[in-house]
Every structure is written in structure tokens, then in C-alpha cells.
Length: 140
Image (cartoon, rainbow, N blue to C red):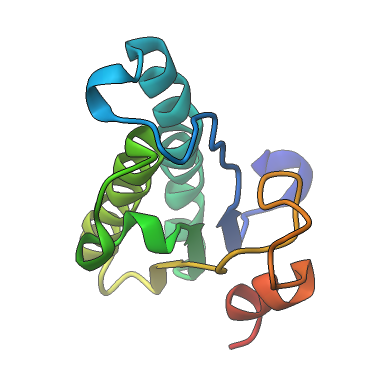
């Protein structure tokens, strides 16, 4: 990547899956579904950070934004969608941990929740446009 494109200065981890019913329960959700959810929502972001942070350190600058969800915030934690909720809570923990690790290097790491957005995952009933959902990540 570095040889072709140079060192990246911005990474937005926006991949996400929500493969379970909103009324799903922990005891009824298969391990395979938990793994699928964590593979995308946590491990995908972790792998990207692991690959990009060393390149950002070389230029002593970087901005990483992990797209999370209000459902992953501890103060909003409740029942339903357990694999999704826990994967986004784990993404928030990854964000805080990595931010502490790179403090003082010129790299900032944050997460943001775009809200309920009209995407393939959010559906047509969502109140926010894609542009409104992206606003927090791109306005600085």
C-alpha cells in the first residue's frame, strides 16, 4: 500500500453488519452469528488499524474514525441485537485503547455514531440521509 499510495493520513472504518433480528436474545443467538458480526464490526477495523498505524507513525500524523453505534454505548446497553451491540461496544473499547497507545504521536483515534441512516442496513424508514450520517466523520 505505502509504495503505491504513500502513507495514509486518514482511515475511516465504516464496514458493519447487523445480521440479527432486533428482538434477538443472547441465549438464542448462534455462535456463528456472533463470529460473523465480530469479524466485520471489530476485527475488520482492528486489522485496518494494525496495518495503517505504523504508516501514520512514520509521518507523525493520522486520523482514524471508527464508525460505531448508539447501540454500542454502555449507557444505552439493553436487550435486543446482542451480537451487534456487543461488537460495537468492543469497537468503542478498541478505539479508546488505540487512542491511548498512540497519544503523542500525532495520530488521533475516535469513534462516532452516525445515527439511524438510510442505507441498505438502515432501511428506508431511517430518518437520516447518508450525507447527514457522514457529517460527523468529515466535518472537523
